[in-house]
Image (tube, rainbow, N blue to C red; front, side):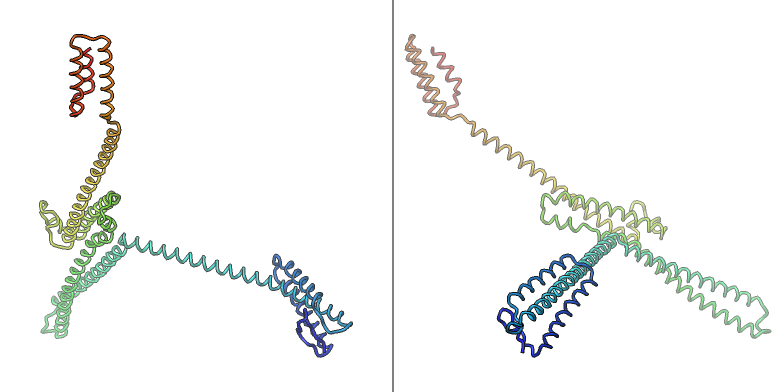
Length: 417
């Protein structure tokens, strides 16, 4: 029995020396397979250092704590097992480092590809959505619908024309049959004439129905063509502008006005387009209308579309006028606020620069004392009484807050000298 222990912990018990040899062969095989795999795989930076470090650490641990067997003869198998285990562990660590790095790189590349694909898909969806919204706003589907209706009318017109040609051919053949021999002499010719007459009647009936269907189809195509500009304007109406007006913010007035003006320009262009369509598809519809009444007086798809456009232009025009009036009021209010602010600042400055009545009174008192000193130094007849009266008048005026100015009071005092 051979015990294999590491740092005192029993790892495995071998039953015979042959088991020890098989263990050494297995460890060597692991090392050989690891080295072969490393040679076949692309070189990975740091793999050699990782394998060498792992092998050195395993060899050091084996030299310190590995014991294979017991007694004096355990040194050789211990060294052999330690070296083989170190080589196997180093090769395994290098392989793990190499293939782990490759797997991580592959996963990162796959993740990057998925992220790039998701970004491209998102950009494509946004581009398609933007293109769809633009096509919806521009009315591409309405143009396609109008073109489809025109193609259907053209095919129907061609079919009715072919039916008219067939009827004309039948009529010509019927007329030729009537100019031939008399029916009494040729019974077969009479039967043919009856068949031709029946065929002509059926062709005439079908032609009449086809013409009615063609007229209805042309009217429907005209209605689709005339309503296309109106439907396009309903899609392009300035919703954001009308929603911004609900808040009546000062900053939203100018953009809303610009949006409404642009939309009114589109409405006028749509009216011109409808009139062109009506003049091209039904030339007599607009010409039969009185010029004073305008094209709207006619009854038909074009007239209805023009009336709707006129109502839309009137409504948005009135809204634009009210918006301009609100913008003018806002501008006036801002100007008034600026004036009030400037006036308030000036009033504050004026109050700060006002003359203190106490200071004026102190100045008047000082002047009066100076005048008294001058009068005492050079008295005049009646000067004392006049000075006393002037001082008394000045004191009373100051007490009553009279409108006597400082300059007038000083002038009066100087006249007493």
